[in-house]
Length: 296
Image (cartoon, rainbow, N blue to C red; front, side):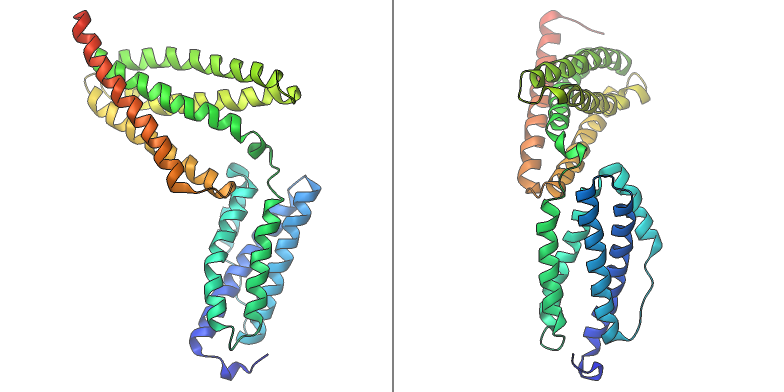
């Protein structure tokens, strides 16, 4: 180990920042690991915590200080792990550490351990691939099915109804009836589909994930029509489309992190299909209204 006096001040500043990050991550991993029931996942997460603790200890030998973890960050990530899953949270944390590897390499000529720690971080990614065994990720395909179908089908339906009915209350009523019926239909179809596959024991859970994704999406898309006055149908349509895009952004980002998939391409595909269907349905609503001579 080189003398601390030989290390540039900028490197010491960087190491102190990394100490705080390592301390935050170590406590977060430890808290998550203690509450994970699966023994394989628990062992991997607790190993990650030990690695982060070891890294922080190495930096202490250079900086001569031991900063405390930012407990708000620790508890926030721990809380999010219950909502979004520990795989998503840990992968997101590791992506942040990946961005620091370039800085490790910048200072490895004066800090020999920098190369070792950078290599450790790369090993973490390989270990994380073995952690993708959460129930929510095993049933991610069923969730995607319900979400994508609801986004495409209901956004198109609501867009068509908006111009045909021009009344938020009537649109919301029609959308709810359509959405609930479609939820039951999708859940039932997923159940029958899984029953005919190699893993029929998972059919019920698959159908529940599909139905839940569809129903939640239906509720979010219809909400603007329920909250706005009856004459504000155009505003409700714009908010509905914005909500649709936000759902796509959030879910695409979640999948891209949890499954290590590209974000932009998947977002463009999903948003393009949903917006295209909505635009076509809006046009159909205009044509049908004129053809039938309906004026509400």
